[in-house]
Image (tube, rainbow, N blue to C red; front, side, top):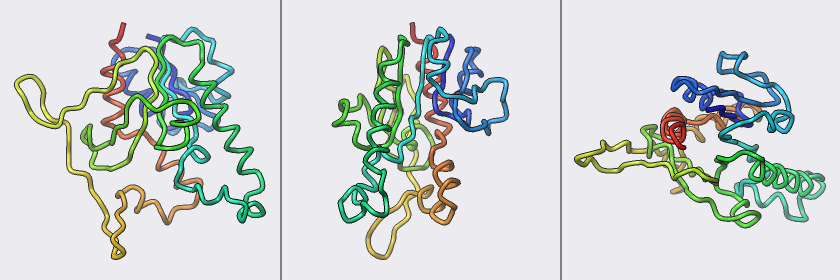
Length: 215
């Protein structure tokens, strides 16, 4: 299959598809950090969207799509964030354009956010700990012509459990945090966003193994 991994500089998903023999390429405005620049398009994804792809897995930027910073859209923050509403509108339009791309099989990944109401509810919500990585991070999937990702909580005659216990940070206030979120709080803004956006190995592997064989 020819597979496009949109908005991915880490190449985490791209590499997993390559391991299975697929002609996969990542695409991002940044240089790739996965070590395979020959598998990477450093350009606008819509400049390569019509190159005959069978499958696209897209990770559009979530900064203005997540609900985590909703308070900053209130009038009292207008002076501090003068373009925040225009930025959100652009992010929504970018997401929808990816969803409507001329590719038969499409998966779009994003944290829990506003696209549930701006487009439609996701087909599936998963966490890294479903697939063997001890992290709690609600991840939504919008799918076109692709099955839900299968994950098994209990061993049975045919499948082995992939679940692991998530590592949770408990604060004195009673609030809980995921390990990744807590450990990246001290990073500079751009480094923090980059670290948090990398697809966890178990999810990347499941995407390649389960969607790479679809007909």
